Length: 161
Length: 232
Image (cartoon, rainbow over all chains, first blue to last red; front, side):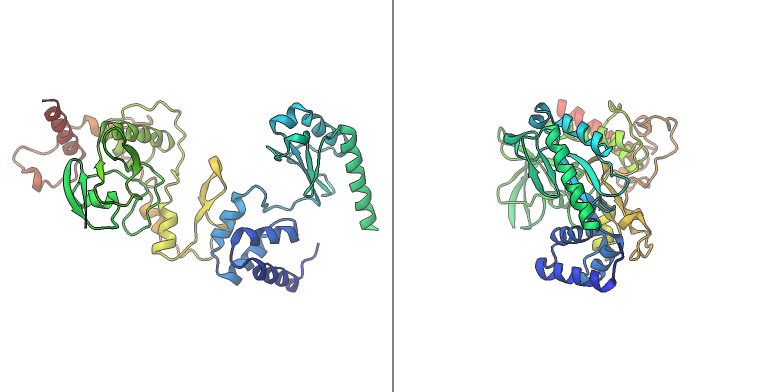
């Protein structure tokens, strides 16, 4: 992934126009664009806005949803809350390991998928639940997880062509 | 000016003062780790706890952040406060036994044992260095990063900071950076050497003119006298 300087400038300027000098929304915007928070972009943000770099770093390391290391293209979040656990969340994790070969906290070698467990997604009514790239899936069975993953893979293959 | 009752004494203090400032103004010592004149109060170390309110409805507040109000009843050294303070000192001792400031506090408050596993952590996260850097040195080179038990003071990306001028202000104010004296029990988490001190001064000296001031032995002795007096 090559990063053009003017491109970064544009992203920063857009984010600034949208959110002003609020650090967290700015970081979210940057993360959405680059899929993580690159160090040099944060340094540029600090230089551009005058927000001390340490304040930006403080926020970036404080929140779990912000990441300073590159993330995979698809974020899979499996709920490991009590309800989802009881209703078979562990089986979903096992199924993902069978299909992709990754455990929670790991990334597939091609950088396509990343698996995380979260403590509650707030939707116990349709446990066990999973979130892929911000989209919620509920009442899941291991078979359905396999289908969702293969669909994502197909789409990724199409994108590459 | 507002009137408050400070340890039973009716005193007048400026409006907008904190309890800690008022107490120090009237010569009542309240221990602190995260407070420093000239820096914004932070309320993190909790050592400056005092009891406020009338009996039966009292509560503990951090005196460094609580502003005085008309008719406030403050007790800076009630049994409740001392008990809590001793617990805090014990926790600090377990976190950072290598600090002289904390060891001195332990001796002063008769904390003689530590029931927790000592961590030998260097930082107590009082935030003095962070505020010193930002507020007095206008540096903003260091700050907190990460969260919970991983929280630590560091520079951005754990790399040498571009804005740090190496002024050393952070080390100057750090209570953990002052290493403890070479006592006889250096490997123990609690030193308490000061507790066993005989008063080093001779009777000849008037204590107001003592060269050793402030002397831990003296302070302990006055505390003991006070306690005996209270019991009588």
